[in-house]
Length: 280
Image (tube, rainbow, N blue to C red; front, side, top):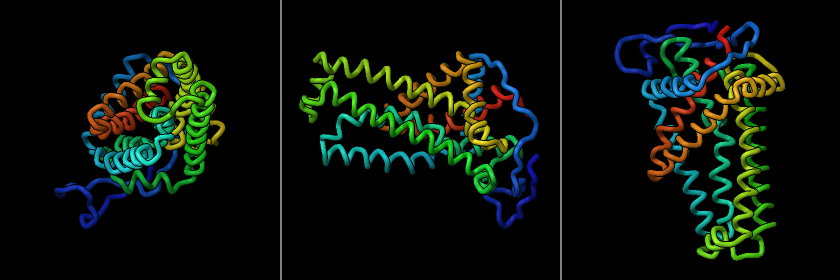
């Protein structure tokens, strides 16, 4: 159980007179890890609970502060050097590989809201000052490495298929969609990307949530997450599909929708964890 204390009125972050509890020394859950068999309905239920957490915490502002500068840097890079154009899609698609890293803060807030009934930034952040931080860093480093390897693989695939063709402006898109080499690049790229995506999905399905909730070694966290994914293949694939669909829908209106869909996915990942791993 978490050790809680009450915040004095002078330090409240919320309007009104109601005091809220704050976790000052968040303790990990105890007991054995038991994997549950979930259903496809648990995916929609987790997203619904994630939407409720988003409405309660209003974490959309945080996403906008981060996403738009990154998108601006990517766009500026392409404008300044059109040779970067072949890497735009691999980089954008690879964002899903490091999605759990970007959404761990939302999961921490959902955990805190579950424990205390209300989420505060200082209470959720206390987790990252605990002994579980090295495991969280290790998971993040692993997914970032997968992302870099995917971008490198995409560059190799491009070089072996369209490497000798024009790679700027309209010539690039013409070669991608109208030539045999372009079709080969798409097919091989999708297959290789799917392998990276499945690996990242298995590692990140409940990996970060376990690191937040329990004191476990990095190897055990990764192994448990992979075992959870293999025990629930339908749910795992459905969650992966939901991530892709919500990211695409969020990106369509000039990236504005990501301020909603990313927090919902982040908060929802915690609730999916609760449906996949028995609460101790």
